[in-house]
Length: 167
Image (cartoon, rainbow, N blue to C red; front, side, top):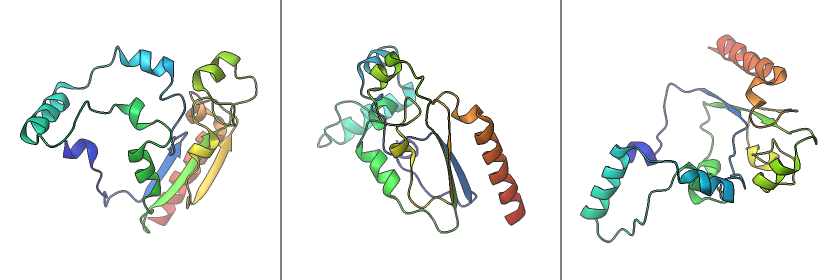
C-alpha cells in the first residue's frame, strides 16, 4: 500500500516533462462514461488483498473501497491537489506541454468530457498548467495526440538536449 499511495523523492530524477497532464483533474473522470467503464476494471489482486488486510487490522479506518484512477483524476480530488501543490524540488526542472484542441472537436466529445473551456478535449488547459515550470508549450492537439504533435516532439527533444548539455 505504501508503494502505491505514498510518493517519495527520487534523487535520480532531475527533469520532468508533462504531456497533457491533468494536474487539477478532468471533468471526464467523474462522467457517466467513465463510471460505466469502471464496471470492466479490476484492481490488481495484490492491492485488494493489502487493502483487506489493512481494514482488518485497523477497524477504525473506514475504508469503503479503494480509489481508482478515475476517482483520483476528478476535479478537486484531494490527492491530486496535494500533488499539484507540492513545491517543486529546487534541483528538478519541470517542463509542460499541453494541448488545446481545435474547435473541430465534436459535440459528442464535448458532451462526454463535460468541458466547454479550452483544452485538449479531456484535460482543460487550466488543469494542465502548473505553477513554476521552466517551460510551457501549447500545441494545437487533442488529448490522444498531444504527445505525437510535431511541436511537442520538438519540445521534448529540446528538453532532452538541454538536459544532456547541463549534465
